[in-house]
Length: 379
Image (cartoon, rainbow, N blue to C red; front, top):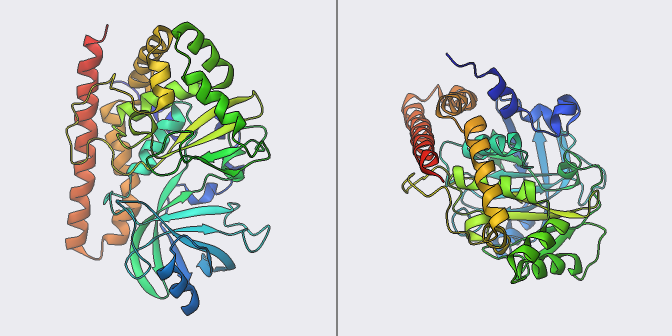
């Protein structure tokens, strides 16, 4: 029988974190150990403010593991599918060092508490993030947590690290480049805004990348893209989004992404996120492994002979190494265990949860089989 030891080692450890896992910010939050409990307290005026403007930060007090964090900037996050108001089951962004410079939560300045309303398994962000990192694509780590708001138990959430300098330092020597937020269903150059960095404020760096995608000659376009884009990482991201059926990601929809200008090599790097509707949830797993691309950078690459060839090569590498049904299904079950333990006192709820985990496992298995079938027919 084939040994999966190497597979799991590569899946658990990102190419950057392999240097020193224990020193990584927030490492103790993402061990797949017992679920942490996070208590959020927002006063009356803060609650009223969030009812009027859910994006405007308010002061909150966070309690976790016997430690209290005060004056934490908090606002509601989410878009069309996951947005909930503060009196419902809101997803929250917590910035610990906004009002209190230097304050960190397990060495992380920013985290998200996702309500996971589109992923009742609470596992898709975690398993897809592991695949990304194993394939060389920077991705935020995620883990289930129990959340309460002003004493009201909201249940299981997904704690996810934010795209901040703490995140960037895990993958890059320097973290001072411009970090751009693509916004909701918006390609680069549309409503992209700079969220951090010491580079130009006029988007002049990003405009050069946009100009390269507009180059009409395929050979020149390929050359220009390679001078300002980390093409290897970008193609790996395209491949992972295709394999995991991330239809709501950058490659196919120009959504759920960040762009970072890496000052180490003067090239842009894309990060994918929003991985909570994966592996064909609600749709068929039989989807082309060379799909039509929606993001302008993805279109610019795949429409060159060199880009298409490199995409197919990387597709074979990632599929054969990191996208195999048996180990992925096993990993899903392992990631589910901490959640199952907190649901154990409620047998009915546990049965429902097990059904969701089984569904995720089955979709992964079916997608892996369909991809393998398509790979055999790939020129």
